[in-house]
Amino acid sequence: MKNINTQVCPVALSGSLDNRIRRWLQNPRKILGPYVKEGMTVLDVGCGPGFFTIEMAMMVSKSGRVIVADMQEGMLRKVKEKIAGTELEKRVLLHKCEEDKIGVTLPVDFVLLFYMVHEVPDKQHFFKELQSILKPKGQILIVEPPVHVSKSAFEETVRIAEDAGFTVVERPKVFFSRGVVLKKG
Ligand SMILES: C[S@@+](CC[C@H](N)C(=O)[O-])C[C@H]1O[C@@H](n2cnc3c(N)ncnc32)[C@H](O)[C@@H]1O
Image (tube, rainbow, N blue to C red):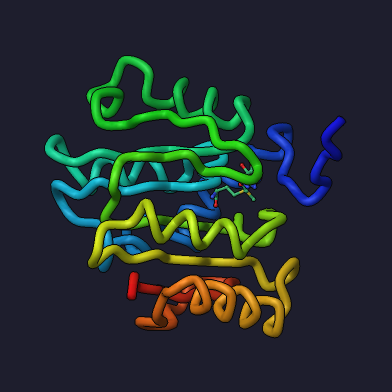
């Protein structure tokens, strides 16, 4: 039997990830504005209850796509409920990941990894897989919480991503977080 990864945020706590206070402190449009553009195909891995997904779907507009991926069915169900009956349904693709495989085959322009990389057990494999999913000029935004992820642990993640072939583009400031943007190559 597979061990349960105790680091993973449970669905029961998803309410703490989607509320007005967070929207004010970590405004999705402000954070994602420099990277997510109309017509893009973007991927939100570890989407949780979809705090960033909804805004991303609006930002890519009708001609774009958002692939929302999570290893917990319960999180994907929350996103599904949020977009049910809205025009966003047509541009949001729900995808169930495995803990050790993202499994997305559609090439993407941008990947969001918000407060999730520290929950991934095999980061080397994770970033190698992302290399194959990203389009040639694609970018990744990694944001991690400083309580769970020390400065040195964050730098170790950046090093692993660099070993997988990514290059640091910038270090954006995100409220109460550590952040980095990486590009392919
Ligand atoms: C702390 S939540 C963050 C959710 C969302 N990104 C946000 O900022 O609101 C982390 C999410 O990552 C998911 N997750 C953890 N490890 C994962 C993996 N290896 N593959 C896919 N999803 C994963 C968890 O199920 C959980 O929904």
